[in-house]
Amino acid sequence: MARLSVSWCFSLLQIFGFLAIGCSAREEIGIYELKQGNLSVKLTNYGAHIISLVVPDKHGKLGDVVLGYDTIKEYKNDSSSFGATVGRVGNRISGAQFTLNGTLYKLIANDGKNTLHGGPKGFSKVVWTVKKYSPEGQTPHVVFAYHSVDGEQGFPGDLRVIVVYKLLGDNKMSINMKAKALKKATPVNLINHAYWNLGGHDSGDILSEEIQIFGSHYTPVDAQLIPTGKVVTVKGTPYDFLRPRTVGSMFSKLTAGYDINYAIDGSAEQKLTKAAIVHDKKSGRVMEISTNQPGVQFYTSNTLYQKGKGGFTYKPHAALCLETQGFSDSVNHPNFPSQIVNPGESYNHYMLFKFSNL
Image (cartoon, rainbow, N blue to C red; front, top):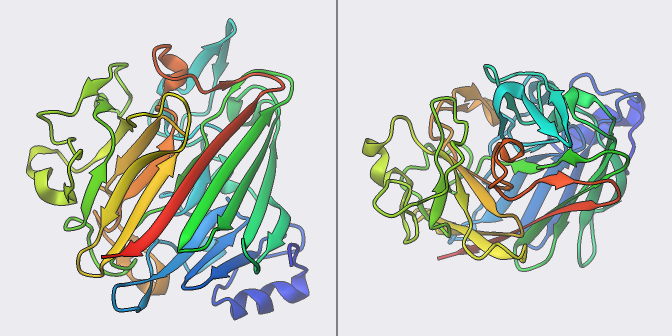
């Protein structure tokens, strides 16, 4: 049921255990559950968010491993982008501006002097159209679509966007983000901003979780988290996760935690490449992420302090993000892989998540 009337909205969402505050026929906000075997995911077309993702631990006990909220109202007021689809350009754009084909485009600053995650009303703050919803069968999936107009948040050109969430069997989920520029060239860098805690969303911090990141280089940033333009080796730095080690093992060498982009090894041809593996030893859960994008942002929710699902308070380091992406601020660094999509061209960002137990 892709579109909800006022009369059905509250009853359907209550059945799903999720109460949408302010749901209306005009907004057509709904909750869409995909389930296959022991894996289930709940999504909403408000911001194309992941609301929950439930997988078993090594004992077969089911647990929700993504941070989030209980109501749509909380998602509307959210500043942490829990589970959101962010864009038109995720991550940061320095000075809230860029020049493309000789034209200077000024964006809306929402992170000091910079633009973050597409601006104050990026793709995570709009209602997407549900084009298809197939909750059962061999590949349960839902397709969300959005038409971003020329000048929206300062970005040039109309852009048609779809996001497809799909379950593939064997505890696998894919996310495919596609976009097509219509009349003007525009930067596009769509990101899924799920906060993961494989011990369970309400299990505490992720400092003891073991992580391996398949990136031998990273892009250093300044005090405002804007890339300097350099791409440097991780060797001899706290950013070296080429071999598995715990998230918190080198926190003493950092100011607050991790918030950095890695250049994924072997990603130059935009083929599906392994980006990271996370293992929570207590629950036994393992998550492996692969992508066709050149980068992955590793973020350890350093300043988080927010009441979430079930009234549980999420504190700093309650989760980690692994946001596959184009490099942050690539529009202002010609040496970075380009994120410019020209009229008639298509953008394609594919992510594959594999869940298992050890």
